[in-house]
Length: 550
Image (cartoon, rainbow, N blue to C red):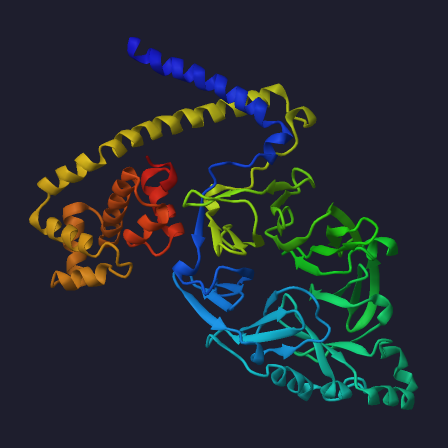
């Protein structure tokens, strides 16, 4: 009976802790807490990035990451960077684009890199820059139009002054209509309504859809489609929706007086559900400082909503869903969780793996399809944040505002307590195993057959070689791959792949205990293709992150 008392005491302590945590956790303020132990991996020029000044990035259809730096575009496949330089003489001019760096990937496997007054185009399949890309988007779209409108014909000769790519991958060009366009209009008055007051039109290069623009709308800054409508976002704060090339409706985000403050730049993102989120920047002449606003446009209700406004510049916007947003700014980055509210969680200081703290210099932020956060900086390259760290700590409505009854709270608390109790017991067991890793490894070396000793020796000789796998191991043993598989599994009950990975992880664990190398260095030295993959394997094997392993 006495042997059970410690467990009973632990049980009661855990029960008390669970209730305290549960009550404290109901406070909305907890959702705003920034964890100090967030771990960041740095990828910079030492790892193959062309330079450490990151301007913009996006994930491509093949899951590669396109990173725009001062020198060009870096295509990252998780292991290596492919650099595509962007010399200024290869750029095509965009007279109407006055924004910052913007990346678009179209359906033709091309990457468009828009910078102030110019654009570059990269063939992603070949990994090289395309010269004179406008030559490929001006003529051929109209070849399939049997009876083009009178307005469409002169657009072949129009000057491309801006360019957009919608969510379907279609390229849209903004063209300045030639002077003889106006003469054609006079000859054909029936088409006068299709002529834009400003002498500009936006053209879908895939199907030839032509939309004349009116100067009263303002300057076009963003464009996208949801399959039903084409949405054009202007610097006046208006969104103008078109259906089948014709005006459907228009909505303003704010009053004309507010619009004067936010005419600088615009960045619009569409979520998978078809919602639009937008950040706009500008300058408040009355207050004499920069301003930014974060907006939401709902196409279903046709209404704008202001989410957040500030007196500094917001840089980039990334929406992982309709509930979560990431925005980089001059002060760090902002994290929005709309389940909690519209108040952002602001992160100004980041702890880097080398012990330094990054307080400023975050230029862009991106969340990839796996949930990982990528931060682009002015001087430190890329910072990768593992999705396993769970940067979003969201809490729904407090219990005193919900319909939960006390009985349900008690059930939840007991379940949480049981889970934590077994988790701690499991961790205690793993801790004992961890403390004896070296002894067990030495015992295994003394007791294992000569064949296993030879296999282990070969793996350790090639530990840092990420490409050293079953095929190379079988070759070094002068065996067939199938023979190696049968013999190793019969002796260890482990596949060759798992055996190799286990050796790498055991060595990595011993280096972590020594504390002389960073996690990045250990991942590379142990032969893992990337720090994120190493972290994933390590946590699966030891039940904790490498940074927690002491």
